[in-house]
Image (cartoon, rainbow, N blue to C red; front, side):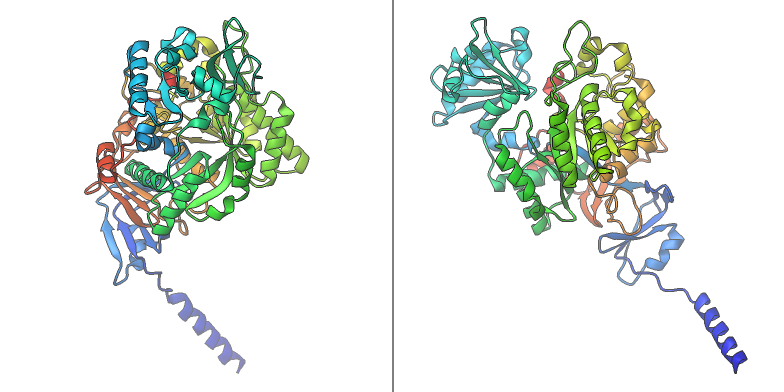
Length: 595
């Protein structure tokens, strides 16, 4: 009896071993491709199977055959190159559409204006067309047209003496008020200078009307015209359509507020949110007019927007301005005694903010350009770890133009990501202006991508768009060559160039990590959402100098095609026509502040 039972169990085992469990049937299968997965365990594949928006199999064409069912849609890639959708971890997405939507409510100065008289004429025409506006508001004032790059209230008073006028500079870090606006705000010689900002004054101690950093936020940005919820939704949908056309499937919105969160949530409910969005809530920004109590309430109520498509566990802090002027550096700018302008002169104040948000599990995106500002955040997070034994959230150095070499390894030890943006890691008018202020040693570690990687750290590459915009593949090529693809110029800090796999990982899996999405997207692996792009050329089989010419053929979000170049508009003009909305993603001039 015992022998019979043994034989029966052996036979059962053999039957089980020889019987293949049926594979899960896919909704869609892509075959015959060159698929770069950004998965170190399986970097390349030929085919990928998708069901219910998620990847159920990745491998060879033969291996995927078992996932084909009666209703499976099989798409032959014809050898085309496929990779994960791209992520942009630093955008101000509403800047792409709000200027055009607001239309006559504000004036945007043309970058082609040639004189102060022409600017005044534009201002006068705008005022005449809008007799009922309580406050006239303009943006894009080219400050370098004025003596010492510092316009005064007289510029406005000469043409509009009897109505309040508020103007943002072309960098958006400065604001100009005329005499009537100063009167409206109750600003005079006795008005105290706010911490983190400056009030320009004349030889008599009277305000000139020009405010910088925090002062611009308090008295200029507060008057910026606001969009309706419907207009936000229209603008967000059009902007995401443009981003889909250049391969972007996920973005991280910096200085996020409720209006854009509401627009994203409405689009998601309608099935029209075609990119994942992480919201990094605004907090005490030097240009932020929203009262602190409202900012705090907004952050505390963030969970109402949270979903697989919308991530809400981030905040945005500002630690300094821009390298060359207000960027906070360890050693003074050459030829000066200035080290820039820290937003947190007291390190303990910054630690208090960092500790609070880390304990809440909120990852901080810290605007930090100078090496002193970057060290401030690193030190604050180090103190959190020493005090509490661990770091709870994922923090990013936003911009990270300069990092001191002594801090490279600390990024890995503290799990801090260096997020490089905007795209000025090759020669631009801005870098040429900054070079004599920093000197050759500091410029040799400008945007130190390779140094951070070599020390075990994680990097990402954002656009800071559309304030300064470069196409996704221009960004990618520039990181590998450290040259502007459109110009024949010497490379900038070539020692910090990185290889193509590192650059792709920075724009996919690493960015997904700082959006708390790496378990969902960022690489093509079983169990993750099928966020995929199909390109017209294989990035690994062409000269690196040709990467920037790459075009996206299809963009797929959770298995659903959200862009197809064969019938969807794939240029900015076409998208604008489809959505009836003008977008500012030209990238032709870049951020006006760089000029």
